[in-house]
Figure 1 (tube, helix red, strand yellow):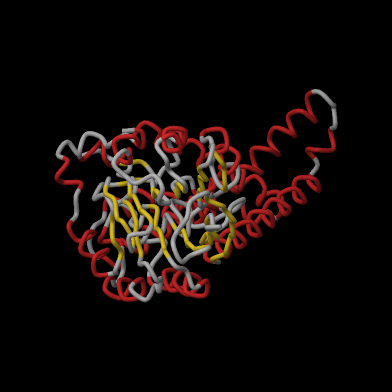
Figure 2 (tube, rainbow, N blue to C red):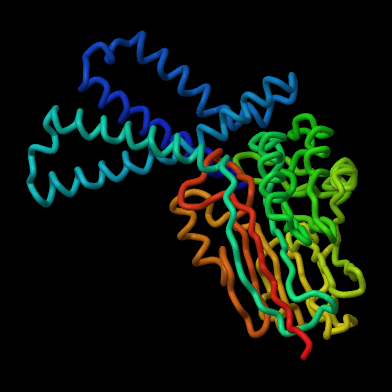
Length: 399
């Protein structure tokens, strides 16, 4: 519904952008004022601008749908970074003309130069954002837990989240992620939700992706939880269309995929590893509300555990941090926020979350939130990074 309500605004903003482009190009060279050129330009622009919608509506052939989806995801990012400098120049121009009385801002030379600078900025940011999204970086954290594990002084945990396997991320990106994980030689790998991007069909060659993920090597295995996008739910430009039937949200192919990939999903479930420490996977709060009606509180989930053993919780969204700390959690591993993914989102998420990205200590508990290894929506990252997190855990040692 939100996507439908916002569509008039999207159309109006695109008309404004086209008008500004024509104004600048016409100033550069009269040839761009030719009606034939302008009609052709508008036709091409409309194809890209509407690919978000056509990729949603057209189901077959699959190859065409995939092309349109990718076009839409690239266009969203480029459009955002074209809109920002254009609007900024518009505002600065109004201030210069109205308040400062700088008539030179309307000179042909000024318009041409400012337009060229905008174009170079948009091209540069787009190329960087696309490259930055595909590059997997490693972020390290060091924690100390005041509990013992017999025979171990430390442990290395790799946290990943938000792969969003689908139109933006596939076998190639998964291979990069797995290679980075295996270079760390982890004892345990935790996946904090959003393996999928709302559509299992969006995963190209799922059997090949399964095989890649199955190559993850960790002494104690690979554990994870579901995220809010791990459902079968139509999505248009980031907005979902809720199903009245919760059973329609479940796609058994997702369950089969993670099982065949060697990933153990914990859904408000607890796993005692080697009799030494606990891995606890929480239901995602949004997914659980749609499907099961809710999830257990941290106290309900952890009250039966032996609190002398380390407790590692995997929770897609970094919520209920104090409650988890009070319930005895030692390490709370999350994703979901993408670190804002694209500027200015990286500043916006900081206002919405107690810990939007990074490490926060609550009492004796460490909450670590990764910016994710994949992307959602616009096929780029600016102001954030695609990452895996390596967490070095030191334990209390016996005297």
